[in-house]
Amino acid sequence: MALVVQKYGGSSVSDAHSIKRVAKRIAATKRAGNDVVVVVSAMGDTTDELLDLAGQITPLPPQRELDILLTSGERISMSLLAMAITNLGVKAKSFTGQQAGLMTDAVHGRARLVDVVPHRIRETVEKGQVAIVAGFQGVSSTNDVTTLGRGGSDTTAVALAAGLDADVCEIYTDVDGVFTADPRIVPSARKIDRVTYEEMLELAASGAKVLALRAVEYARRYDVPVHVRSSFSSTTGTLVTGTHGDAIDPNAPAAEEETQMEAPIISGVAHDRSEAKITVVGVPDKPGTAARIFEVVAGAGANIDMIVQNVSAAHTGLTDISFTLPHADSPSTLAALNALQEELGFASLQYDDQIGKLSLVGAGMKSHPGVSARLFGALRDAGINIEMISTSEIRISVVTREDALDDAVRAIHTAFDLDSADGEAVVYAGSGR
Image 1: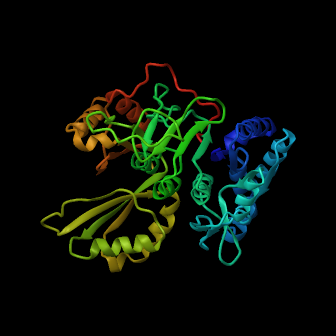
Image 2 (image 1 turned 90 degrees about the vertical axis):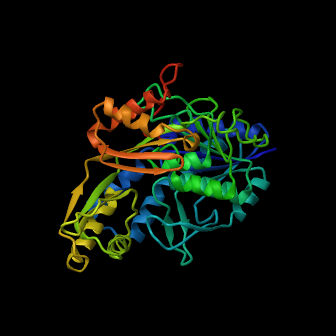
Image 3 (image 1 turned 180 degrees about the horizontal axis):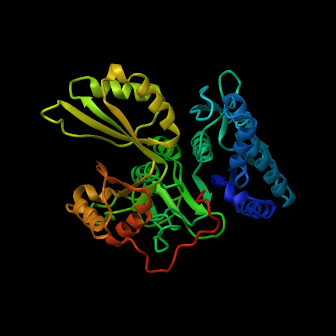
Protein backbone atom coordinates (compact mmCIF):
# COMPACT_ATOMS: atom_id res chain seq x y z
CA MET A 1 0.00 0.00 0.00
CA ALA A 2 1.35 3.40 -1.01
CA LEU A 3 0.58 6.80 0.46
CA VAL A 4 -0.20 9.13 -2.45
CA VAL A 5 -0.67 12.90 -2.22
CA GLN A 6 -2.59 14.30 -5.20
CA LYS A 7 -3.04 17.97 -6.08
CA TYR A 8 -5.70 19.23 -8.50
CA GLY A 9 -5.51 22.72 -9.97
CA GLY A 10 -8.34 25.11 -10.64
CA SER A 11 -8.84 24.02 -14.25
CA SER A 12 -9.30 20.43 -13.05
CA VAL A 13 -12.17 21.37 -10.69
CA SER A 14 -13.68 24.25 -12.63
CA ASP A 15 -17.30 23.10 -12.37
CA ALA A 16 -19.52 20.36 -10.92
CA HIS A 17 -18.87 17.99 -13.83
CA SER A 18 -15.09 18.40 -13.43
CA ILE A 19 -15.30 17.84 -9.68
CA LYS A 20 -17.21 14.59 -10.23
CA ARG A 21 -14.62 13.46 -12.79
CA VAL A 22 -11.77 14.17 -10.37
CA ALA A 23 -13.67 12.39 -7.57
CA LYS A 24 -13.81 9.23 -9.71
CA ARG A 25 -10.04 9.32 -10.20
CA ILE A 26 -9.46 9.76 -6.47
CA ALA A 27 -11.90 6.98 -5.60
CA ALA A 28 -10.18 4.66 -8.09
CA THR A 29 -6.79 5.41 -6.52
CA LYS A 30 -8.21 4.61 -3.07
CA ARG A 31 -9.89 1.40 -4.24
CA ALA A 32 -6.60 0.29 -5.79
CA GLY A 33 -5.30 -0.08 -2.24
CA ASN A 34 -3.59 3.28 -1.72
CA ASP A 35 -3.91 5.77 1.11
CA VAL A 36 -4.84 9.11 -0.47
CA VAL A 37 -4.46 12.74 0.59
CA VAL A 38 -5.76 15.36 -1.85
CA VAL A 39 -4.90 19.06 -2.10
CA VAL A 40 -7.28 21.17 -4.16
CA SER A 41 -7.20 24.68 -5.59
CA ALA A 42 -10.12 27.08 -5.99
CA MET A 43 -12.52 26.34 -8.83
CA GLY A 44 -11.51 27.79 -12.20
CA ASP A 45 -10.88 31.53 -11.99
CA THR A 46 -12.42 31.95 -8.53
CA THR A 47 -9.31 33.55 -7.01
CA ASP A 48 -9.14 36.18 -9.77
CA GLU A 49 -12.86 36.85 -9.38
CA LEU A 50 -12.47 37.35 -5.63
CA LEU A 51 -9.56 39.74 -6.23
CA ASP A 52 -11.69 41.71 -8.69
CA LEU A 53 -14.53 41.82 -6.16
CA ALA A 54 -12.22 43.16 -3.47
CA GLY A 55 -10.97 45.77 -5.94
CA GLN A 56 -14.53 46.98 -6.44
CA ILE A 57 -14.79 47.59 -2.70
CA THR A 58 -11.44 49.30 -2.15
CA PRO A 59 -8.29 49.88 -4.20
CA LEU A 60 -6.14 48.86 -1.20
CA PRO A 61 -7.81 46.00 0.70
CA PRO A 62 -6.15 45.12 4.04
CA GLN A 63 -3.93 42.09 3.44
CA ARG A 64 -5.30 40.19 6.43
CA GLU A 65 -8.89 40.54 5.20
CA LEU A 66 -7.84 39.75 1.63
CA ASP A 67 -6.31 36.46 2.80
CA ILE A 68 -9.52 35.53 4.59
CA LEU A 69 -11.47 36.31 1.42
CA LEU A 70 -9.20 34.43 -0.97
CA THR A 71 -9.03 31.25 1.11
CA SER A 72 -12.78 30.86 0.75
CA GLY A 73 -12.26 29.64 -2.84
CA GLU A 74 -10.32 26.55 -1.76
CA ARG A 75 -12.78 25.84 1.04
CA ILE A 76 -15.59 25.66 -1.51
CA SER A 77 -13.58 23.25 -3.66
CA MET A 78 -12.55 20.98 -0.80
CA SER A 79 -16.06 20.57 0.58
CA LEU A 80 -17.64 19.92 -2.83
CA LEU A 81 -14.94 17.39 -3.69
CA ALA A 82 -15.41 15.60 -0.35
CA MET A 83 -19.15 15.40 -1.09
CA ALA A 84 -18.49 13.97 -4.56
CA ILE A 85 -16.11 11.31 -3.25
CA THR A 86 -18.48 10.32 -0.45
CA ASN A 87 -21.25 10.00 -3.03
CA LEU A 88 -19.12 7.34 -4.76
CA GLY A 89 -19.06 5.22 -1.61
CA VAL A 90 -15.58 6.26 -0.42
CA LYS A 91 -15.32 8.06 2.91
CA ALA A 92 -13.74 11.50 2.69
CA LYS A 93 -13.25 14.45 5.01
CA SER A 94 -12.17 18.01 4.14
CA PHE A 95 -9.76 20.27 6.04
CA THR A 96 -8.65 23.87 5.80
CA GLY A 97 -4.93 24.61 5.79
CA GLN A 98 -5.19 25.54 9.46
CA GLN A 99 -6.90 22.25 10.33
CA ALA A 100 -4.31 20.35 8.32
CA GLY A 101 -1.47 21.77 10.42
CA LEU A 102 0.19 24.03 7.84
CA MET A 103 2.01 26.61 9.95
CA THR A 104 3.35 29.77 8.28
CA ASP A 105 5.01 33.06 9.08
CA ALA A 106 2.84 36.17 9.43
CA VAL A 107 3.42 37.66 5.95
CA HIS A 108 -0.03 37.95 4.38
CA GLY A 109 -0.32 37.31 0.66
CA ARG A 110 2.93 35.38 0.30
CA ALA A 111 3.47 33.55 3.57
CA ARG A 112 6.16 30.89 3.85
CA LEU A 113 5.73 27.56 5.59
CA VAL A 114 7.61 27.22 8.87
CA ASP A 115 6.23 23.83 9.98
CA VAL A 116 3.87 21.07 8.92
CA VAL A 117 2.04 19.22 11.69
CA PRO A 118 -0.47 16.97 9.85
CA HIS A 119 -1.81 15.05 12.87
CA ARG A 120 -5.46 15.24 11.79
CA ILE A 121 -4.60 14.26 8.23
CA ARG A 122 -2.63 11.24 9.42
CA GLU A 123 -5.48 10.17 11.72
CA THR A 124 -7.98 10.47 8.85
CA VAL A 125 -5.81 8.35 6.55
CA GLU A 126 -5.32 5.72 9.27
CA LYS A 127 -9.12 5.42 9.50
CA GLY A 128 -9.21 4.53 5.80
CA GLN A 129 -10.66 7.87 4.70
CA VAL A 130 -9.52 10.23 1.97
CA ALA A 131 -8.30 13.55 3.41
CA ILE A 132 -9.10 16.61 1.28
CA VAL A 133 -7.00 19.69 2.10
CA ALA A 134 -7.54 23.25 0.91
CA GLY A 135 -4.41 24.39 -0.90
CA PHE A 136 -2.75 27.81 -0.93
CA GLN A 137 -3.35 28.52 2.76
CA GLY A 138 -2.07 28.08 6.29
CA VAL A 139 -2.15 29.73 9.70
CA SER A 140 0.36 32.00 11.45
CA SER A 141 1.58 31.78 15.04
CA THR A 142 -0.99 34.47 15.91
CA ASN A 143 -3.76 32.20 14.57
CA ASP A 144 -4.41 34.38 11.51
CA VAL A 145 -5.25 32.81 8.17
CA THR A 146 -2.49 33.30 5.59
CA THR A 147 -2.06 32.56 1.89
CA LEU A 148 1.07 31.20 0.22
CA GLY A 149 0.93 33.22 -3.00
CA ARG A 150 0.39 32.07 -6.57
CA GLY A 151 1.09 28.38 -7.02
CA GLY A 152 0.65 27.88 -3.28
CA SER A 153 -1.43 24.73 -3.73
CA ASP A 154 1.58 23.00 -5.33
CA THR A 155 3.64 23.96 -2.28
CA THR A 156 0.88 22.72 0.05
CA ALA A 157 0.85 19.34 -1.68
CA VAL A 158 4.63 18.84 -1.62
CA ALA A 159 4.84 20.00 2.01
CA LEU A 160 2.16 17.51 3.06
CA ALA A 161 3.88 14.76 1.08
CA ALA A 162 7.09 15.50 2.96
CA GLY A 163 5.35 15.76 6.32
CA LEU A 164 3.49 12.47 5.79
CA ASP A 165 6.49 10.70 4.21
CA ALA A 166 4.36 9.95 1.15
CA ASP A 167 5.59 7.69 -1.64
CA VAL A 168 4.82 10.24 -4.34
CA CYS A 169 3.24 13.65 -4.81
CA GLU A 170 1.11 13.78 -7.97
CA ILE A 171 0.45 17.25 -9.39
CA TYR A 172 -2.54 17.15 -11.74
CA THR A 173 -2.93 19.94 -14.26
CA ASP A 174 -4.38 20.49 -17.75
CA VAL A 175 -1.39 19.23 -19.76
CA ASP A 176 0.14 15.74 -19.84
CA GLY A 177 3.34 16.66 -18.00
CA VAL A 178 6.37 18.93 -18.32
CA PHE A 179 7.07 19.82 -21.95
CA THR A 180 10.13 21.12 -23.73
CA ALA A 181 8.21 24.40 -24.16
CA ASP A 182 4.74 25.76 -23.50
CA PRO A 183 2.53 23.74 -25.90
CA ARG A 184 0.26 26.78 -26.28
CA ILE A 185 3.14 28.55 -28.05
CA VAL A 186 4.99 25.54 -29.48
CA PRO A 187 2.42 22.89 -30.49
CA SER A 188 5.28 20.54 -31.42
CA ALA A 189 6.68 20.60 -27.87
CA ARG A 190 7.75 17.19 -26.60
CA LYS A 191 6.78 15.75 -23.20
CA ILE A 192 9.75 15.06 -20.93
CA ASP A 193 9.63 11.67 -19.17
CA ARG A 194 11.93 12.60 -16.30
CA VAL A 195 13.61 15.81 -15.20
CA THR A 196 15.91 16.61 -12.28
CA TYR A 197 15.02 18.97 -9.45
CA GLU A 198 17.75 21.36 -10.63
CA GLU A 199 16.43 21.51 -14.19
CA MET A 200 12.84 21.91 -12.98
CA LEU A 201 13.94 24.70 -10.64
CA GLU A 202 15.47 26.57 -13.56
CA LEU A 203 12.42 25.96 -15.76
CA ALA A 204 10.02 27.11 -13.04
CA ALA A 205 12.14 30.15 -12.18
CA SER A 206 12.27 31.04 -15.87
CA GLY A 207 8.52 31.11 -16.35
CA ALA A 208 7.36 27.51 -16.85
CA LYS A 209 3.98 27.51 -15.07
CA VAL A 210 3.29 23.78 -14.87
CA LEU A 211 4.91 23.56 -11.42
CA ALA A 212 5.44 26.32 -8.86
CA LEU A 213 9.04 27.24 -8.04
CA ARG A 214 8.61 27.00 -4.26
CA ALA A 215 7.10 23.54 -4.61
CA VAL A 216 10.16 22.35 -6.53
CA GLU A 217 12.47 23.88 -3.91
CA TYR A 218 10.56 22.06 -1.16
CA ALA A 219 10.59 18.78 -3.10
CA ARG A 220 14.35 18.97 -3.61
CA ARG A 221 15.00 19.82 0.03
CA TYR A 222 12.99 16.84 1.32
CA ASP A 223 13.58 14.51 -1.64
CA VAL A 224 9.89 14.20 -2.54
CA PRO A 225 9.27 12.51 -5.93
CA VAL A 226 6.84 14.71 -7.88
CA HIS A 227 4.79 13.25 -10.73
CA VAL A 228 3.26 15.92 -13.00
CA ARG A 229 0.20 14.54 -14.80
CA SER A 230 -3.03 15.58 -16.49
CA SER A 231 -6.34 15.14 -14.70
CA PHE A 232 -7.99 14.93 -18.13
CA SER A 233 -6.18 11.77 -19.31
CA SER A 234 -4.46 8.62 -18.06
CA THR A 235 -1.20 9.45 -19.83
CA THR A 236 1.99 8.87 -17.85
CA GLY A 237 3.40 12.27 -17.04
CA THR A 238 6.77 13.66 -15.98
CA LEU A 239 8.65 12.49 -12.89
CA VAL A 240 10.67 15.18 -11.12
CA THR A 241 13.42 13.62 -8.98
CA GLY A 242 17.10 13.95 -8.20
CA THR A 243 18.23 11.85 -11.16
CA HIS A 244 17.62 11.33 -14.86
CA GLY A 245 16.10 8.06 -16.06
CA ASP A 246 13.62 6.57 -18.48
CA ALA A 247 11.08 4.69 -16.37
CA ILE A 248 8.23 6.46 -14.63
CA ASP A 249 7.74 4.30 -11.56
CA PRO A 250 7.37 6.17 -8.25
CA ASN A 251 7.85 2.92 -6.29
CA ALA A 252 11.06 1.90 -8.04
CA PRO A 253 14.49 2.83 -6.63
CA ALA A 254 16.03 5.88 -8.26
CA ALA A 255 18.22 5.02 -11.23
CA GLU A 256 21.88 5.94 -11.24
CA GLU A 257 22.35 9.32 -12.88
CA GLU A 258 23.31 8.99 -16.52
CA THR A 259 26.64 10.26 -17.74
CA GLN A 260 26.72 13.65 -19.37
CA MET A 261 27.33 11.95 -22.73
CA GLU A 262 24.06 9.99 -22.39
CA ALA A 263 21.96 12.63 -20.66
CA PRO A 264 19.86 14.97 -22.77
CA ILE A 265 21.77 18.18 -23.29
CA ILE A 266 18.67 20.39 -23.28
CA SER A 267 15.54 19.87 -21.15
CA GLY A 268 13.44 22.69 -22.49
CA VAL A 269 12.74 26.34 -23.28
CA ALA A 270 10.86 28.48 -20.77
CA HIS A 271 9.52 31.99 -21.16
CA ASP A 272 8.21 34.73 -18.89
CA ARG A 273 6.16 37.85 -19.64
CA SER A 274 5.70 38.92 -16.02
CA GLU A 275 8.89 40.97 -15.66
CA ALA A 276 9.85 44.59 -16.28
CA LYS A 277 13.25 46.28 -16.58
CA ILE A 278 14.55 49.24 -14.62
CA THR A 279 17.73 51.04 -15.70
CA VAL A 280 19.48 53.32 -13.25
CA VAL A 281 21.22 55.83 -15.52
CA GLY A 282 24.40 57.73 -14.66
CA VAL A 283 25.49 55.84 -11.54
CA PRO A 284 28.83 56.92 -9.97
CA ASP A 285 31.22 54.03 -10.60
CA LYS A 286 32.74 53.70 -7.15
CA PRO A 287 32.76 51.01 -4.45
CA GLY A 288 29.52 50.67 -2.52
CA THR A 289 27.19 52.43 -4.95
CA ALA A 290 25.70 49.26 -6.43
CA ALA A 291 25.37 47.78 -2.96
CA ARG A 292 23.41 50.80 -1.76
CA ILE A 293 21.11 50.72 -4.82
CA PHE A 294 20.22 47.10 -4.25
CA GLU A 295 19.76 47.65 -0.52
CA VAL A 296 17.09 50.18 -1.47
CA VAL A 297 15.55 47.71 -3.94
CA ALA A 298 15.53 44.97 -1.32
CA GLY A 299 13.94 47.34 1.18
CA ALA A 300 11.12 47.88 -1.31
CA GLY A 301 10.44 44.13 -1.23
CA ALA A 302 11.42 43.48 -4.84
CA ASN A 303 12.68 40.14 -6.15
CA ILE A 304 15.52 40.83 -8.58
CA ASP A 305 16.16 38.46 -11.47
CA MET A 306 18.75 39.58 -14.03
CA ILE A 307 21.35 42.34 -13.48
CA VAL A 308 23.63 44.01 -16.04
CA GLN A 309 26.15 46.81 -15.36
CA ASN A 310 27.71 48.64 -18.28
CA VAL A 311 31.40 49.46 -18.48
CA SER A 312 32.06 52.85 -16.93
CA ALA A 313 32.58 55.74 -19.32
CA ALA A 314 36.18 56.86 -18.80
CA HIS A 315 35.50 60.58 -19.24
CA THR A 316 32.56 60.72 -16.81
CA GLY A 317 33.21 57.92 -14.31
CA LEU A 318 29.53 57.00 -14.61
CA THR A 319 27.84 53.72 -15.51
CA ASP A 320 24.32 52.34 -16.03
CA ILE A 321 22.84 49.44 -14.05
CA SER A 322 19.84 47.52 -15.43
CA PHE A 323 17.86 44.84 -13.64
CA THR A 324 14.62 42.92 -14.14
CA LEU A 325 11.92 42.34 -11.55
CA PRO A 326 8.23 41.29 -11.42
CA HIS A 327 5.72 43.86 -12.71
CA ALA A 328 4.04 43.86 -9.31
CA ASP A 329 7.25 44.94 -7.56
CA SER A 330 7.94 47.84 -9.93
CA PRO A 331 5.88 50.71 -8.42
CA SER A 332 7.35 50.38 -4.92
CA THR A 333 10.88 49.96 -6.32
CA LEU A 334 10.67 53.03 -8.55
CA ALA A 335 9.27 55.09 -5.67
CA ALA A 336 12.03 53.95 -3.30
CA LEU A 337 14.81 54.74 -5.79
CA ASN A 338 13.37 58.14 -6.73
CA ALA A 339 13.08 59.07 -3.07
CA LEU A 340 16.81 58.50 -2.60
CA GLN A 341 18.05 59.83 -5.94
CA GLU A 342 20.14 62.58 -4.36
CA GLU A 343 21.83 60.19 -1.93
CA LEU A 344 22.48 57.55 -4.60
CA GLY A 345 23.72 60.12 -7.10
CA PHE A 346 22.23 58.69 -10.29
CA ALA A 347 20.94 60.86 -13.14
CA SER A 348 17.59 59.23 -13.95
CA LEU A 349 15.51 56.04 -14.06
CA GLN A 350 14.22 54.28 -17.15
CA TYR A 351 11.32 51.83 -16.90
CA ASP A 352 10.39 49.25 -19.55
CA ASP A 353 7.49 46.82 -19.08
CA GLN A 354 7.42 45.56 -22.68
CA ILE A 355 10.07 42.87 -22.30
CA GLY A 356 10.03 39.08 -22.35
CA LYS A 357 12.50 36.55 -20.96
CA LEU A 358 13.49 33.33 -22.69
CA SER A 359 15.53 30.63 -20.95
CA LEU A 360 17.22 27.53 -22.33
CA VAL A 361 17.62 24.86 -19.62
CA GLY A 362 19.56 21.60 -19.54
CA ALA A 363 21.94 19.87 -17.15
CA GLY A 364 24.03 18.65 -20.08
CA MET A 365 24.94 22.09 -21.42
CA LYS A 366 27.65 22.71 -18.82
CA SER A 367 29.86 20.06 -20.47
CA HIS A 368 28.96 20.77 -24.11
CA PRO A 369 30.62 23.71 -25.93
CA GLY A 370 28.77 25.76 -28.51
CA VAL A 371 25.38 26.00 -26.79
CA SER A 372 25.52 29.80 -26.47
CA ALA A 373 26.65 30.24 -30.07
CA ARG A 374 23.80 28.06 -31.29
CA LEU A 375 21.22 29.97 -29.25
CA PHE A 376 22.41 33.41 -30.30
CA GLY A 377 22.71 32.27 -33.92
CA ALA A 378 19.11 31.06 -33.93
CA LEU A 379 17.89 34.39 -32.55
CA ARG A 380 19.98 36.25 -35.13
CA ASP A 381 18.51 34.20 -37.96
CA ALA A 382 15.01 34.94 -36.64
CA GLY A 383 15.79 38.68 -36.58
CA ILE A 384 15.38 38.95 -32.80
CA ASN A 385 17.51 41.38 -30.80
CA ILE A 386 18.93 40.53 -27.37
CA GLU A 387 18.85 43.17 -24.62
CA MET A 388 20.20 41.28 -21.59
CA ILE A 389 21.95 37.95 -20.99
CA SER A 390 22.26 35.87 -17.83
CA THR A 391 23.72 32.38 -17.35
CA SER A 392 24.13 29.59 -14.83
CA GLU A 393 25.67 26.13 -15.17
CA ILE A 394 22.46 24.72 -16.63
CA ARG A 395 20.64 27.81 -17.97
CA ILE A 396 21.04 30.66 -20.45
CA SER A 397 18.48 33.45 -20.24
CA VAL A 398 17.99 36.39 -22.58
CA VAL A 399 15.66 39.38 -22.56
CA THR A 400 13.96 40.39 -25.82
CA ARG A 401 11.05 42.60 -26.82
CA GLU A 402 7.79 41.17 -25.50
CA ASP A 403 6.16 41.07 -28.94
CA ALA A 404 9.07 38.95 -30.27
CA LEU A 405 9.03 36.43 -27.42
CA ASP A 406 6.78 33.77 -29.01
CA ASP A 407 8.86 33.77 -32.19
CA ALA A 408 12.03 33.52 -30.12
CA VAL A 409 10.72 30.50 -28.19
CA ARG A 410 9.78 28.69 -31.40
CA ALA A 411 13.11 29.51 -33.05
CA ILE A 412 15.17 28.20 -30.13
CA HIS A 413 12.98 25.12 -29.70
CA THR A 414 13.56 24.14 -33.33
CA ALA A 415 17.26 25.07 -33.29
CA PHE A 416 17.92 22.58 -30.49
CA ASP A 417 15.92 19.76 -32.13
CA LEU A 418 13.28 19.71 -29.40
CA ASP A 419 10.28 19.44 -31.73
CA SER A 420 8.26 16.25 -31.35
CA ALA A 421 7.63 13.91 -34.27
CA ASP A 422 4.47 12.57 -32.59
CA GLY A 423 2.08 15.36 -33.49
CA GLU A 424 0.84 18.32 -31.49
CA ALA A 425 0.76 18.37 -27.70
CA VAL A 426 -2.70 18.42 -26.12
CA VAL A 427 -3.85 21.27 -23.85
CA TYR A 428 -7.05 20.09 -22.18
CA ALA A 429 -8.17 23.32 -20.54
CA GLY A 430 -6.20 26.50 -20.97
CA SER A 431 -4.65 27.90 -17.82
CA GLY A 432 -1.65 25.59 -17.53
CA ARG A 433 -2.41 25.09 -13.83
